[in-house]
Length: 571
Ligand code: DON
Image (cartoon, rainbow, N blue to C red):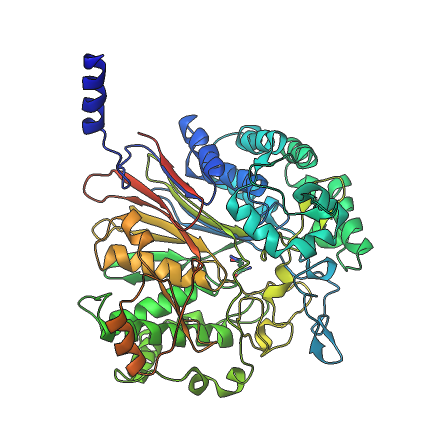
């Protein structure tokens, strides 16, 4: 007995419970333990980072239906060690029959028309994206990569506090569709469909069958045939405009990644139609211009610059970022040294610039604080060879449109809300867009998703960090802060991702902060400069990141401690 205790103690000393546990093999991070586990299974079978990320994306669609799904869309960045970077845009597009004023009645936006039900559904593109990635840079067969998702759909997801929170916020929307209510709700005490109790197991056999079809025939299963017909019939039956041609025609788009740098590290992030990568590089550029040496995250003077840089970047994004396939987007000019110098010079070190001064006309529509009912999924992977993936995928608002395509288990997105229903009027994230992001047929809505890869200073071809986040407008600020916590403050990844965050998005003109983000003296010093703060009890987004140590080559992973996710690795 004593010997047993002794060896246990020895084991504990030799392998301390280390939150920044270093792994010699690959690492994965995502919002769901079971999706992360699916990624690890691929790595353990000898798959690469792309195999792992795609398996995680399929599994996440099963276990996190409130955040992402097969009838959604997203972006992925891939750094195949030693080869050219890949950026895949598989975001949804507006149906061909969409029109600028489709969400207006008598000139006013109709509440919830762009977030709930048939008209909110943009053309699904996630499966096209996942499988294009797998074909281009994966190594395992489709059937192997989809196997964990199929099993999870059969065995069921277990209702967690997060599930309950999201379902509570969307319960009315889910009750609007009997199929969604049947799958995602359970009869309450009064017999009406209600939020299921903690621990309820929700099986999704129809989704398992759809996944099997995809495993057998690939993305074609979503483009035509029974699944495509069901999607179209469900949407049109509920008053929507989606057609089978929309599904047959929607494309994935390989793009040139948006490139920049910070503190000597090469950065690749996502270009338009994401506004997130743009915000990231413009903000970091402005900060580095004003603080070429170092950034002190606790100093009021530096926090002031950080907030002012964000205010300008979110304002520029609202004005200039749009679907690059329909309008020319001037990212090169906006990220040029000249524009960065202009922005830096426009910041008054003594005083906050009122947001309305930046773009007076847009600021007239007062934006409500962003709602908390949102999410999305970030999947970050580095494999043992140093290949890296950052993939962000979403249905948009919680449970998307709340419509399930009959007999398929597919929950449909509500990505149409990422357009400006009425230019100048805030969307569900409080984001105000201009005419450039108005609804138009075939157009891609602007996004905040920010999958990002950061490379090592001394070996710019070797990965340092794969990172991204969820939370709508909170995504860019979450990613920026974790990245700065690592590169400026030298924090290890779990500490960097746990540190309190400060968020400003131009409109509304208020900085949102985690309860532990600012001490009272710092806050008072910033208020004296004219900043206003709102302490958010909820997390301000979620960041998932993995990192490779330049000296030792060991890898660490961090899943945002505010969420229910998991960071795993191969010993
Ligand atoms: O693409 C976007 O910016 C949004 N559809 C992302 C949605 C999101 O992050 C939802 N919440 N976390």
